[in-house]
Every structure is written in structure tokens, then in C-alpha cells.
Image 1 (tube, helix red, strand yellow):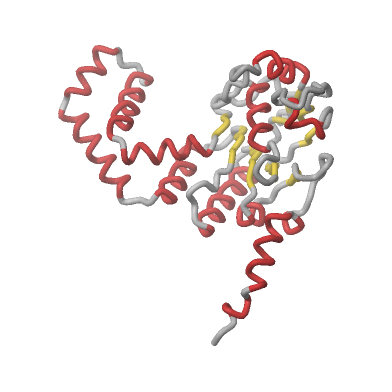
Image 2: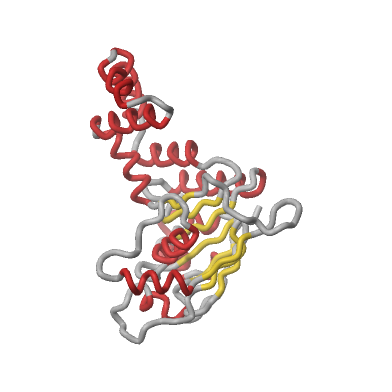
Length: 271
């Protein structure tokens, strides 16, 4: 399922090199990204892939978007957003969608690390449990009574015990298993954070299945060769001078890994 068909970046960029986010996308002004079920925004540090995800999430108004109208750039950021545009996909009757699925979300690496931090900070975990109870309909008075009850203390201990058995990477993988549900649009910023290569591949395979069989669409910012090589994705290379797609094995970061291990291949061929 394609929920977001395309996104056009602002054609206008200010001549001032200090204007954000204009200076980040000066070489991409007016370009249009066409999305598949899985689309990857590849680029090295400073390429703008995370900023682009946030621009898209702000324009779409989905959960998790970080406000761009701060840090003294409010006028310019809003202008950039106003001058950008998008087109939604079609429903199963081939009619253009009017809105995105309600559970669509922008998830950053910080969101994952926050979940991991819950393991180590009982106060954050306590706050999270209380928030869940209130969101289920409990009043503040009822929630306060629940917090003082033995059942709350027991639940807190059980969650801490079960989570402490997992490493950061395992917790990250668990986070995706719990939060990635069918029928949504997800914008993921470096989802490989804290994951081992094996778990990066496992996560990427899970994303492939969600997109192929469960009507989910993904736009992912990454430079992990393991994720790039596993995803069945269209890849935009933001390191290029103009917007263009690329094969994963032609990307600079992937070739760097290949050259590194090829240089030391004799270490892997010893009897």
C-alpha cells in the first residue's frame, strides 16, 4: 500500500547560506521524491536525510514530528514547509486518499533510546505506566489510587525484571516488534541504532514483511550496509549532486565496508 506517493521540496532557497533548512536542500530545490512501499534516504553525516524526514513529517502533521519553527529559524522553516507539497496515494478502489492512517508516525533514534532508558530509570517507567492508565480512561484521582496500590508496585517490578534481561540491542528490536503494526506509514530515522548486524537484518526483514503482506509503507533514513542490503527498497542517494536513485552495492558507505574487509581477507581464510 502506498499512502504517500510523492513529496516535492520547496523550489525557493534563500541565498543566505545560514538559513535553515534552505541551505541543507539547496542542491535539491524543487526536486520530487517518488515513494515505493519502502524508500530509503541514504547519505553520510550531514547529508540532510534526518532533516528531510522531519520536513516530511512536519508537512504531513504526523505523530513524532519535531517542530522546525524554533532555534531562530521559524520564519524560514515555515516558508520552506509552505512551499513544499505532497501527494497521497490511492485506496483499494483507486481513489486518492484523503488522509493518512491515524497510527502513522515518525520515529527517531532518540525515541528508541528513550525506551531503552526506561529500563534504567524507574521514575520514567513509573510515569509511563501512569500515562498508559490515564490514556485508558482513568481519572487523575483513580490513577493516584492505582499508583498507591500493591498491583502497581508488582507490575513495576515485573516490567523492570523482564526488561533487565535484555541488552540495549534486544530492547531496540523488541521496541520495533511492539510498535510497528500493519496498515501504517512509518518514517524511521536510523532504526538500526543499538542493533547488532544480525539484528539489523532481522529488523529489515520484518519491515519487508510488513510492507509486502500487511499494507505498511516505510520511508527510512539509514547508511547501514546491512539494512541497505536487506530491504527491498528504492534508495535515494542524498550524497549525490542531484536527486537520484542508486543500487545499495554502489553506495559509498557500503563499498567502504567491502574494501575494509577485502583488505583483511587473509585473516578470514586461514585454516
